[in-house]
Image (cartoon, rainbow, N blue to C red; front, side, top):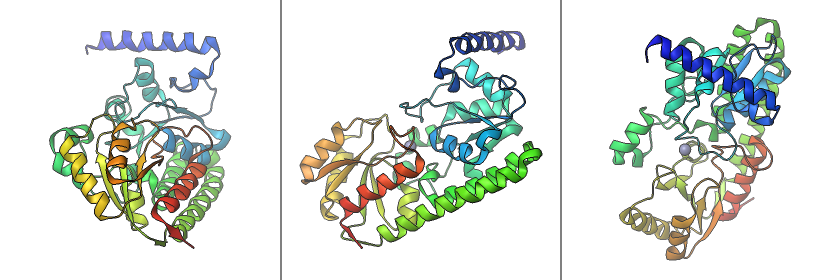
Length: 315
Ligand SMILES: [Zn+2]
C-alpha cells in the first residue's frame, strides 16, 4: 500500500476507534487502541484468550491488556480490522504465537517487528503433528511453521512462557519490575499445581488414546503420555470420508469410549464417528477462545475431569 493510502487507513481506523470508545461499551476492549488512550500505562495486545489470561496474571493493574480475538471467535482464521492492526503498531508489546494466526503474524511483522513477544520462541516447541505433515499443502500453508503452535495446553510449558513474558514486561516498564516478578511467581506456582493435578489424575487409565476434533492437544498428550488422534487438523475444514474411516478404525482398536468435540467446532462429524464406534461425545476445550465460564485454570481442570471419565482413570 502506498504510504499515503496507508496513513489514511490508519486515520480511518483511529476514527472508528474513537466512535467505539464514545459508545462506552465493552467492545472497546477487543478493539486494540493505539497507545495513549489509557494514560501512562503500557498497553499490551494479546492475540487470543490463553495469552490474554497469562498477560493479565502477570500485568495486574500495571498494564492495559487488550485482546484481538473476541470471545466465541475461532482464532485460527482471524482477520484483523484496520484499527486492530493500528493497535498492534501502537502497543508497547503484542503477545502472540507465530504460526497460529497468520493475520496477527503479518500485523506484528509489518507494524511492530521489535515489539512482538512470540510465546513459541520462549519455550521448546514440538514438531507439527503427523497429520499436519501428511496433509502438506493447506496445513503447511496455514501455519507456515514447522512446530505445533498449541503450546498453552501444557501448563508446565505455559509457566515457561510466563517467566519470559515477565522479563520482557520488566524491560519495557522497569518501574514495575518487582510487581511483575511477584505476580509471575504466583502464576508459575498455580500452573505448577495444575500440572501436578494432571500428572496424578492421568497416571492410571484404561486407555490413553484421545480422539479430538482438531489436533490442538499435542502438548497435553506429550506431557501426560496420551496419544492424540485428530479427526481434522483444521478446525474449519470438513474431514474426508477416508479420514473418518481411518479414525474410526483407530478408535475401535484403542477401545476409545469418547469422541471429543469443541465448543467452536461443529459436532456433526464427531457424532457420526461416535455412533459408528459405539462411543459417546464430550467437550474438551482447547481454549482457543475464552471459556464461557471461569478462566484458563478452571477450564483446564474441567478438561482434566472430562479426560479422567473418558479414559477410565483411577486414583
Ligand atoms: Zn488450533
